[in-house]
Length: 66
Image 1 (cartoon, rainbow, N blue to C red):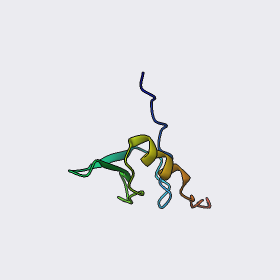
Image 2: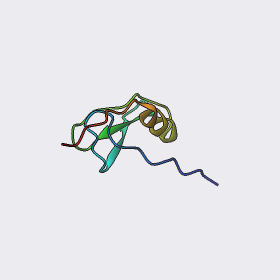
Image 3: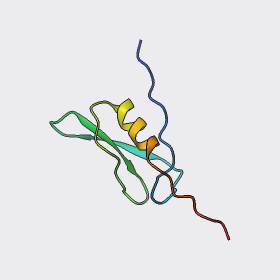
Image 4: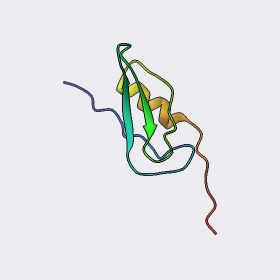
């Protein structure tokens, strides 16, 4: 039975709440999360679940609405 990884939160840089892409690095079996809008990348990890966890732990900028 596999455990489904949690869902990536909004981008810590641009606050884009749409889809983030899980990018595998070829030949190194590492993964990271990349923002679909600003293309910011999270830290590399050896599992998808770890990549999501690291992305979700990043401090978020809160934009003030005017």
